[in-house]
Every structure is written in C-alpha cells, then in structure tokens.
Length: 310
Image (cartoon, rainbow, N blue to C red; front, side):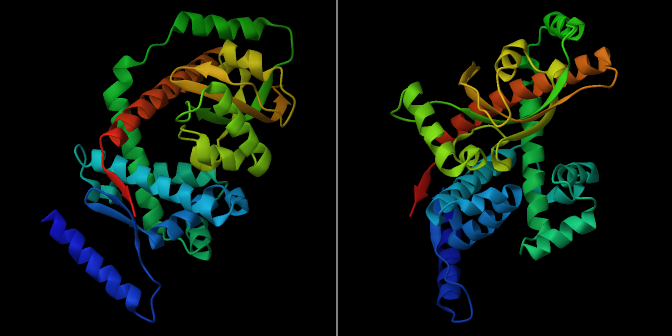
C-alpha cells in the first residue's frame, strides 16, 4: 500500500510539473514512505528566513541544504510522535504556545503575525503545524527523560549566593550559541576551525543554522537575555572574559561543545530576588539537560531511518 501511495504521489507531481500553469515539481528526498519536493524546500526557506533573516545572505545551494535538513528533521520527529500522539488534533494547540512564539519574534498580536506571514507568502496553518510538532516533541522528551535529569540544588543555590554576595556589579547577558559535536572525519580542532571559518565568511547566525544541533539553531543560535545568576560558574567564567560581539573558545559540555557569543550586556540595577533566580536556574538547567537528551534521542532515530537523496 505504501509503494502504491508513493507511485500515485509521483504521478500526480509529474502531472503538475508538466502543467504550463504550475511550477515544476520534483522529489528531492525520500524518507521511507514520505517525500520532500523542491517546492517543500522553497517554502521551508521562506520560513527559515522569517526566523533568521540573515540567511538571505547565503548562496542558494547552502540555503537549500539547510532547508532540506530542517525538513528531514521535522519528518523524523513527526514519524516518532505519531507513535504516541494523534497529530490530527493540532487545533488543540494552546493559544499560549502560539502567543509565546509570536512574542519571541517581537510581534504584538496574532492578527499582526498572520499579516506578516501573508506578506512573506507563508501559510499560518503550516507554521502552526510546525510549532505543534516542536511542542509535542518537547513533551515527548520531557515524558521520556525528565526522570534522568540530575540537578545538585544545594550547589546551584550556593553558586547563586556566591555571585549575589560578590560586591561586583551584576549583569544580564544577551547571548547566542553554537552547540556542536565533532564533524565526521574531523577532530575537534578541525571542527572548530571549520566553524570559525564559516563564522568569518557568513556570520555567527548563519553558521548556527548550519552547525548547531541545539534547538536554538533555527533562530540563528539566539538565546536572548540571561541573568548571570542563572548561568553556571563554568559558563560565567568564560562569558566574563568576552567583550561585546566576541565569541568564546569551545566549552566542553555533555555530548558536545559550546561556542558562546556575547551580543550585549547590561548592568542589573533592580533588587534581585534570590528565590526567583534559583527557581529560574532550575528551569534553565532542566531544559539544558533535556535538550541534551533530545539530541541523543534524535541522532539514534535518524541513524535507524532510511533517507534517500535523489
């Protein structure tokens, strides 16, 4: 039945491609019984450029590869999610999730968001579906791995108190990241050199789209503003050495290495709530560990799935 479905899709695409009133359509990638076409890639490029406008600076080949990899990732996640969730219930996606995404793009309302998407030739329901898949993926990772999250709360609280009691000024940092593992057939130094050369050629944000395996990659590696009390001592020691727009040396983390870029910094002048900072630090550390589990789990799924580029 799956082979028949693929044949029917192929015939339909061929017919559409031959139509003088339609764009030519070709299958670019097969992932078992699912396909990615050149039109899918074109739409994905629009979406990724919406998330990271600097991608427009890349040549077509590089941008096509980023879009293709993004779609492959989405399909692999979707296939796994179908084992646990009914993906047809995407209308049940809470408004709070959509509004959080909209807010992250500095957009004031849902109506403005839809208008912006229309102007960029993007479909709201399609974008909503992407957000839905990522939301369910995060839920799956949480359900699967939360019991494995280990946080030394005593040490974490003491770290916050030590920084708070330090008489130095307190800062918030605006950060971006590239979290990477070794590139095939390259050692760490060669991998770092490849990424640094890419940053010099096409910028940090575009290099994050290409090399970062963190869930911030689609947004050009953007983390945003973070209170220094919520950052581990290990990262703080590296960030404190950076000037604005500087990039750290590779920082060894669990399952990979981290390059941190300091986009901006500002002094914290308001009174600091230690308990609030402690709770937010727990959330950030939990998310960091869950992201690490997510990367490992996805790599295992991808390794066991057949992907054919045509």
